[in-house]
Length: 304
Image (tube, rainbow, N blue to C red):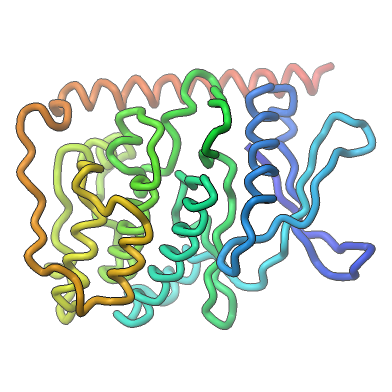
């Protein structure tokens, strides 16, 4: 929903990131509201593992808002993993701990990211992680912003929690799940679920548990396997209930309850496979239609 540019700050002489709403969506009230929400979130968050908001305003035309963000030297966690995965166990724990600490802080400020993935994490040359892109984050106490009646179905298939797949808004346990997926990927070298298309991936995560991470790589401490299993519970009620609890276990593996095992789900738990498949299919069809509509709107604006 936005475009970002690296720029030189004429006042400080340093480099910054300029972020604007996508030109084809500037007239969409929901997109504008989400952009304003991102500014409000940025002003709340001051943490060493979160990209800083430096300034915000409007262009001279008075229509286009913009955000000035801290420029972070480094690369995305996605590119880092492409070069280094699987990570060493110590580095995977360190990176996951940094993410959990940053997100625990965000949750304390009433912010749920909802789109955590390696593309939205930067790695600096000295190994510090920075969370970026709060464009679809939830802000506690703020009114709901609806975009095409599908603002609840957001995220990236490989990292979406089952409740997001079912169209729920999610909460901090949704971020817990995403950290669990990233930790799994850092340890195993791949995400927990694979399929021929996003629909298959999303359906699997709703109806099936992932292979134990220890089955894909030897030498992982049992306590760390339990942490991953606990974070990736399909039922949010059986997951870590707070990011702080996940952060604690990552830094105190010797205190992890090795007897943890999720209770079996009865028929009253997750929806049946065929209902889930229908919901996911309809969701993607509507998202495709929204994309086509946005493109047509953009072309119409260009003609004018």
